[in-house]
Length: 306
Ligand SMILES: NC(=O)c1ccc[n+]([C@@H]2O[C@H](COP(=O)([O-])OP(=O)(O)OC[C@H]3O[C@@H](n4cnc5c(N)ncnc54)[C@H](OP(=O)(O)O)[C@@H]3O)[C@@H](O)[C@H]2O)c1
Image (cartoon, rainbow, N blue to C red; front, side):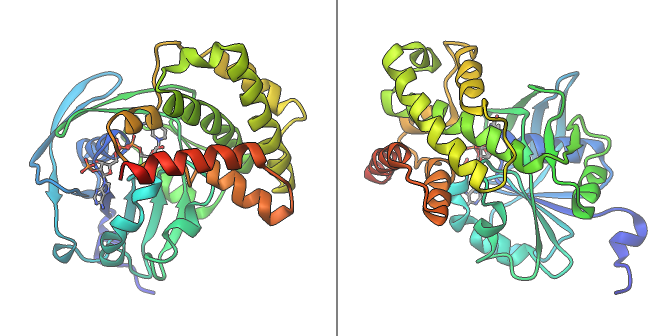
């Protein structure tokens, strides 16, 4: 296939779906770097975004479109809605994806490619593990914090190398990880403990210190690690205990994404997190009764308030 005009000029067309903590930072940082043509796809029109990056605060002009009928296929789509909103973003994906498009799925969970398959046609899917903290301060104001040595982890693929190149000039630091599947599961283990416990109890992370909650989280983690091993994640035998120890070091006054969604009466990301453990367990014939119970309670909470 001959190179497109954008490929020849080096400028690529990038669309960011969702302008919350993660998408607002990604769109703002890419627009500020100025190397590519960035549009943002949101539910409210905006003309500018203030982005508090780790080293500077910048105000960048940002074209936000609100109608999928106004866009056409691009080189890169960054999908940054919560996983449960992927379906509602389906019209954006259909309009933005062509055979040359790669969709960087910047969401939690492990089923990134399956999640977009019904909407993305021939576009390729790139799963992205997001480590940076993105916080929406207002519709037109987001803040980025580095949390670990890398801000996003990617599998060792050509698409991932191209995505890392796309991010050049932004503070979003990528890492290509040979142990990508292990990292997906390590993040999922944290998420199936911290998110459900804080959302269901309506308590911040200090609640994880309770002895009775620790009994529960150990059981959730042991089930999930058995499933992860069956999935070939290559986790160490100590993974459940390691995760338990790690979450106990988290700040007691920190909330979680699901905690804030529950307080706000929004739908919860339970299907992509706890649900992923339950589905993978069923596939391998590994019982996950504790995670299944959590999923039932979270689904009731999420659907009951939707
Ligand atoms: N925030 C973090 O620090 C962090 C860290 C690691 C991983 N993650 C993961 O990253 C993903 C994104 O999280 P987030 O914190 O950025 O979520 P968020 O702040 O809730 O932002 C999601 C954005 O998606 C938008 N959206 C939802 N449905 C849409 C649709 N149909 N069309 C257009 N926009 C739509 C929302 O719009 P409205 O404003 O209209 O609701 C919102 O702006 C999640 O999977 C999360 O678990 C987040």
